[in-house]
Length: 201
Image (cartoon, rainbow, N blue to C red; front, side):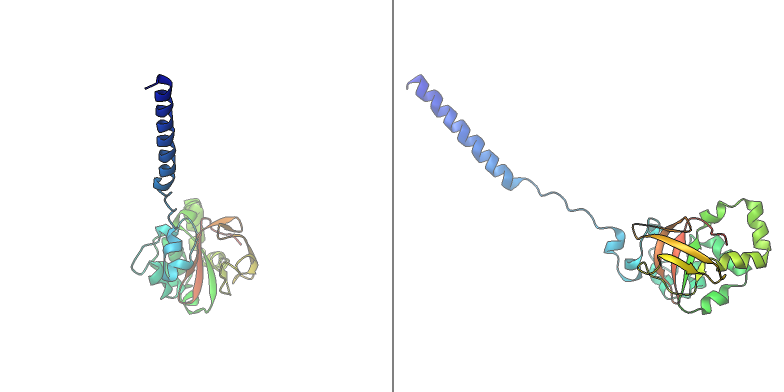
């Protein structure tokens, strides 16, 4: 065989092989994995309406879970939540448990234990010992209306007869500068927004 003809044949075969490989590669490349949905997006029941980075810290079952809290009045629901032990102690100290449990359609901005821990111990102890001041602080965290994420934005009057202001949305929300860690948690008589700072009247 003529050497030049042989070289042409090899080049043609090589070109055809590479072309087929390229075509085959387009068909056989693995599809990119689909991003996993967030736990909130895949949740069902009361958990499905919640939002925020700390929602994953809520127990998956039991009285302190989203399902458990949804069936209890707000103070009782909070008592089962592991993030809100100091708040529950303060509410109990101020004799507000029955007031909150019997209220209808309220919104509670609930500071976590870590939020209370930001207050120097001596100051916190003094507040807990002053029932009148403690009541003012706690009722400053309660709005006498049930507010979901579409209506919670803006300025609202509190049970302390003063006001708080909510900014942002489900992608990032603050209440007088305090960050919402887990919002729109349903209880039997209230909607709860867990926050990272104690609000002062």
